[in-house]
Image 1 (tube, rainbow, N blue to C red):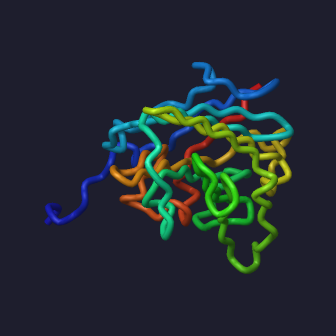
Image 2 (image 1 turned 30 degrees about the horizontal axis):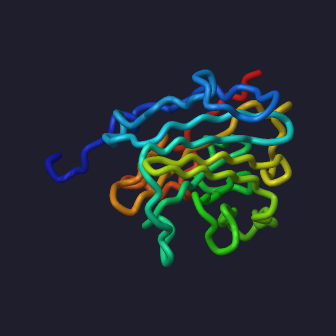
Image 3 (image 1 turned 30 degrees about the vertical axis):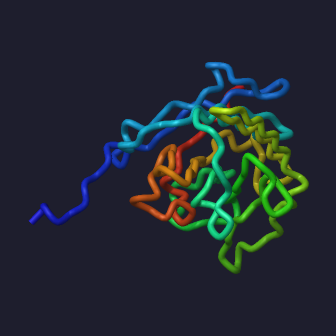
Length: 209
């Protein structure tokens, strides 16, 4: 009777938590800031490395993609090169639905629809609040013949509920999309879940000084 049930991924049995270190300047691609790879647990083939850091003014992330830029999906950004970030500034694992503290961003290696990134969060009616302007997101893209990188700074005022002096954990995951292959994920696969609707499954970043 169990033959018809989908296989469970190893990561579904665990809650993932890792350190996110304090930044005194710009984020560099240093081993101490590197996020662990969960591709083996998600049965994925990784094609990028990720680094993150924080301070009172911003949350920063850097993606080093080991494949050349191809194209942006014009009708659906998930069908091209794009990076989605999911952040819960309060890491509310006990709340199974999206709250006002949850954020969904998408970023691109080239300018798309007038910007390199934007917030696309969707809230329930009672939690609706203004999302940040694309002009407030600081994005730098560096493209070479066989790879590209994205450096992203999300200012504190773009993250509703971001108070790292008081709340020292954040919910976090990402989805790195490609046109020619399955996406790379962090803590939860979109083959199993609609990531943006399940913040309780996102990883925990421990904001360490």
